[in-house]
Length: 525
Image 1 (cartoon, helix red, strand yellow):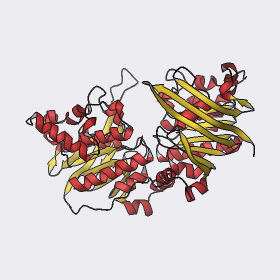
Image 2 (cartoon, helix red, strand yellow):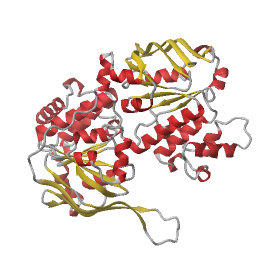
Image 3 (cartoon, one colour):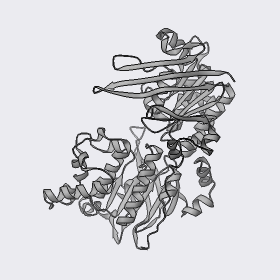
Image 4 (cartoon, helix red, strand yellow):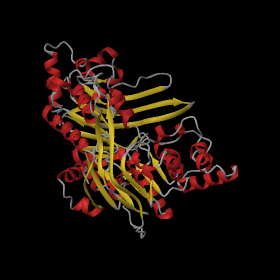
């Protein structure tokens, strides 16, 4: 079988703060024509640096050293001039980046951005429409003048794919193409990439940390750790008989499932006919009618103390709106009972006494932590509002106890969020929620941006904390593997309504609704 590209002894190193960082070390692999080859590993393993080097998007400088050989069409890409590389990028090798919203220009229409990839072509608009149809964009002609913010995450990713295949490349590099997408959209994007690969006989390099994706579509795979390839081979063989301990660790990184159940039957949280509506802006200056979007419709749930309710559904199903309503961060109609108190009727001042009992951990720990505060200030900030009577030494002792519980060290307290990894930042967010000794914690996609092994660590931590402190969780996620690991009961939401509810076994083994079955099939469980 003919090789489309071959990498020999590729090394990339950076100098940061007078320290040498060896991002890629003596990497060797090849990709055959028409095959799907995957590079897997955790953040910082060198996956994306390898891919960027193959497009020569990383340039040599005083602080960056690149060596080795990248053979494509009998030439070493590392030695080519920028003029020659321009002819290869897009036509010979093309790339889909991880985050389509930041990769697409917010100021330009979809038509203009795809058109920029097409050179010397008559009937350019017809070709753009053809590409949009090829990647599964409905009503393609109507989308031409849309801007990226007018499209969903899945649609934006499809536009990126359309741009990447516009000139029929021989090799398509997809860098984490399904991160942060719903499970059904993930499956659609993966199926699309696989079908395009087969249809156009192009090779696909898939970069990911999700082994379930690799297992489904890859022919061969290589595993990277700390810039080195520790193992590579055929996908089936590698999953069946991994040789390296790190590969085995990645394969076994599925979160442990909940092994204990709370014996407490007290209902700690309950909703009666909860409705959430958002007012829409009227297009007409003279229109007096207010239009509303009904985000959550007649929601009724009950949550026992010490249990976990998993909330699943696609983007726009009402999951996050429901969570914000529980915290009274948005207006809602209906009743919300915390124990025997109807908190939905309380004003902000009256609710403040209850707020410490219901805390939230957000999806992106970096965005939710203030970059200007030290970790000590971030964790202790809530005490300034809810426990003003505490003395300074009491606050310090409480912070020390909390960081120990979440697996952090005392020496970290004077550092800032940017100095920590994603997993460490999420532990800081958990510590900030725990310091007020809440009874209920809402977890809104707390592991979506984390590596598989770090996800497992966070899930294990949450389970242990729940057992030790009798915490009650509402766990919102599109990652069904983690929902299965943490939850006692699950509600499935679609278009603001609960379409199915039941125990973990009922939902995963005997789903009743076709939509729930579709979610399960899309999750590769």
